Length: 332
Length: 277
Image 1 (cartoon, rainbow over the protein chains, first blue to last red):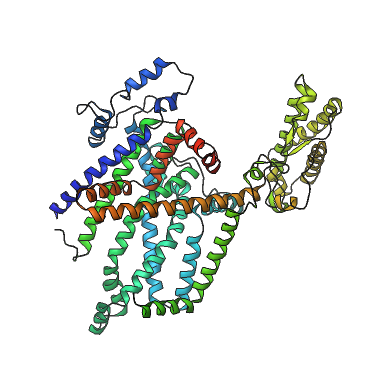
Image 2: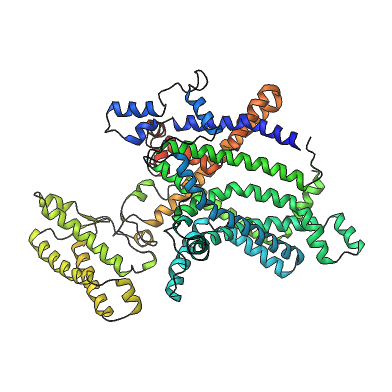
């Protein structure tokens, strides 16, 4: 088990270094200092900033720790994000990242958990009534749900949830901006008022969008599993229908479910780019987009490195989870 | 797969009515897109040219009162700016409301007209929230709407359509309304189908060619070639798509590279992407 984990980890190190190199090269196609400071700045100021961030050093070929690449790799692997942001003077990249992680997770974790729970339940339900009208209705609504663009859900969600609903009920329901950080209020207030007020609508939109795809996929998995021999055996042994569904079938369906969830995690980051931007939630995705707009080079470089790192770690964890769930996967 | 199973799955497919209907829809969609792509039903010039007043709602709809008020204000400001300049006549000829040009060019007449309209809309500005008033129908809402209508029609009376912007296609151009610069949203929407299809086809073809070539090389030579190709593939596959897109847009927007690419392609990329990202 540990040997497998370490081998996968070692295999991924060159991949991650490749990503860092790619990101570094891509961000240097256009002179980052020039892009941020503009044309009306003296040569000395530009040189001074280059010197400060080591952008005048050789890119690759130098003694270790001297080249830009060596410094960046060291920084990322030692989690040393103390470089100062250009757009927010006086704040380090690490501080900004720390500030943005909370809001992102407040959105993506509930969305992922809810989507998976609801989709698995619906798909079990659908597989139970396979071929009957209720199953067909569920499949058709799933297809309709996934045929509609994310942006349409956002626009309609904002219109109905944040404009029409408050107008009709006279209550303040959902907000589309003005996220409140838990540190600005108490935790109990955050969970009872501020979180639902700012994050529930985007979470619901995310769930609705994800549900169509997931339900269809899980239903197919359940239908396939229900035709297997072990189900027949379980029935023959006299296991009740419920036991067959929830113990025998669900347990075996866990392998595709886990794969699916793991595949969805990076898409949650993608989805939250849109949601964070449209609902002004100061998360990682929105911060990265703002940094690109303002040519805030240290933030773009560090954030992309972290996103890629997270992605690799998630993939690694998925492989380990496989092994835990599916005894057929050998870890040698 | 043997012929037997192939024909059986074909029969199964043909018996599945929803699948056939879906296939028909996809074929129709692709055919429409291909027609748009190959013919020049809509040209890029048409999508960039104003065709009517700006901010016109689609399907003959009505703007909200606040919006109508601010749009009147925008027209008045444009005329006022021209009137204040020394070369008034020259400036007045350049005033546009979407594609519309000024019909009245006597500065004195314009000034009196503008003052009267301004005093009407100043009164309207005293209300807190016009949209809410109209919705609730409270108080002076009907009277207020009438004043707004008068101000609007008097402003519109100052403008006229430029020559050549009449004809049978015009209703169609204005069907979905216009944007802030008076450009037809329908034409721009049709043009965007072309862009979407083009991007889809190009990425599809390029990725198939690249992928097949790399896969063949990797499989044929094996050894270190295989290792390097696998490494490159894993590197690209391990960056979330959206992050890669963001990094590339940071790298290639507004710099020399942007100009070079646009130079090569005759500005095609810039037009497709619509200015700096």
